[in-house]
Length: 404
Image (cartoon, rainbow, N blue to C red; front, top):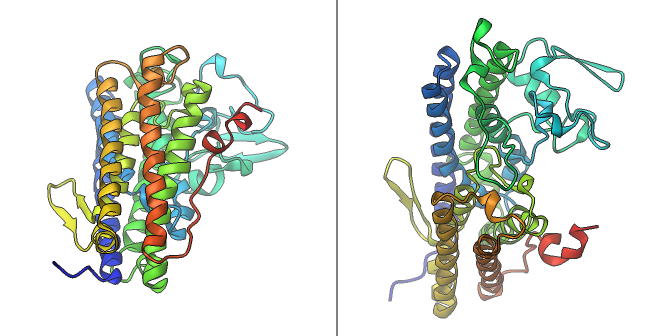
């Protein structure tokens, strides 16, 4: 029987997968930026579709990195810049009249930065005459201390490429026309030059943010150093905290069960593009990657090494087999959801009121995530670690609170 790996080697694999995952996220973001450049230069149905496809491709590696949240403070402090949701899109651009013009909790709810070079809010004047990455990040992101004021990242770009999804729980995603980026009299939606400037600034900022996180996981990067400085036990606890918290509170709870309880399409993660089934799937894949110590890169190569699975197996082979089985069951449930979406019923339709069959498919994935979290929690003492804090969610722990 092979000797179990050293915990330090497991941590190295974990960090290597992080570096590769963020590097792939950066490469696909750069491809997205190139597609956005072509859209702005020549706004046609074809260039808009190419930009959308590049955005969808960029989500695949990024979602697999979300398992690095929660346990790694450097990642969690940074994550809101690139993947915060849901967003009050009226901050950014024009919206349907049904959206409304004001909110009791958000003074920036419908300021429409693209249409307004000067913004007046509560006696304050914001100069938005030139749309730059600095304006988006330093002034607009979480403006007024409101988390829904998402001005940057994947979802701001998604909104600009697709526009609002006005279909509720009926079929259809956002349908922004390419002419929203056209020049001169061909422009629809108004302010096409500023819309293009916003899209380009958001894209450039996404690249800068991802470069920062790639560097954090390089050989001498801050995130890798922090992981290793926590020692073997601290590092393993970090891995399991990220796995458990993404699995339970974040994905099963806030991203899935909450929307299912409310039957609310606004609680859909990739809500403009109807790509939520893929985002959820690749979150689950990322959790399994970390446990198995293996990541399949976008170029077809593989990064891997000593794994948490091997470490658990050496302590309790049955527990390792159970964990693997639970992870595979979750992936299977997510793939069933993806198959349903690709057959014509999007995620926001699946969670709709009265759609018992669609609701059941989503609930099956939630149940699988909860079950795998329970196994993750059992791995902690099996490895002789101190109890970890797994993120919770009212939607799972206290559903009645959701309706109050």
